[in-house]
Image (cartoon, rainbow, N blue to C red; front, side, top):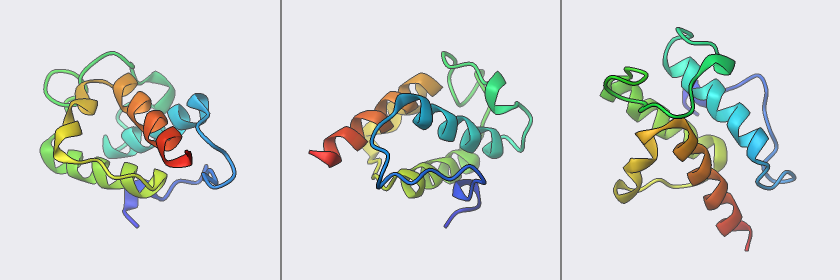
Length: 104
C-alpha cells in the first residue's frame, strides 16, 4: 500500500457505499499528505488545479496521489481520466461515480 493511502481515518468501502462527504474527507487527507501537510485537509480549496499554479503538486507527487486514490477506493484511473486532477471537486466526483458504477 502506498504511504499516502495509509490513513488513520480508514473507511470500510465494502460497507459504506459512495457517501460524498466520506469520499471528500478521505481525498482531502490523501492530498494533504501528498503536499507533506503544507495545507491542512480542511483548508484545501475544491476549485483549484491540483498541479501547477493551483496546489503546486509536482508530477512525482501526482503519481503517488493517483496510486493512493486507486488503492484507497479500489478503483482504476486510466490515462483518459487525468482531467480529474483539474480540481479536488473533480477528483471527488470521479471517485464517487466510480464507486457507484462498481456497486451496480
